[in-house]
Image (cartoon, rainbow, N blue to C red; front, top):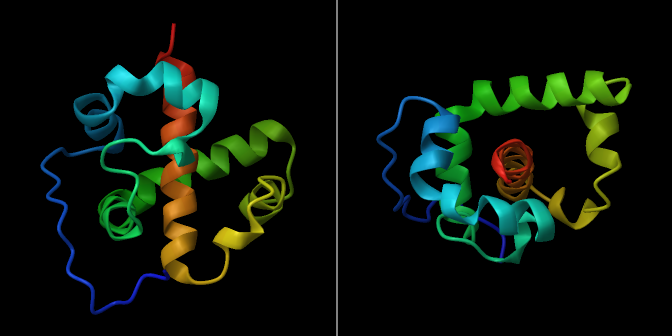
Length: 115
């Protein structure tokens, strides 16, 4: 179901940056996220309403991560990189786009942290 702006934002975020948030909430699952992808159902990133809250809180940081990653992959821009995700089903509205970006950021950090 697509996210509707009228849905209640339920997730409370107390950390100052995305990395701290990830470490507080998902560090224990980093290996599984790195191996299987963030879309497999993990705490705090399963529901679109939650991932929208995360994206809205850390938008600049997540976007900077995406720009850096796109450049390192030799992509023209972030949109070019996203096209390679093969998740065009997540580009139907802004809510699912934000969800995809949070999953991207979680997977990036998980690969850095996972043993």
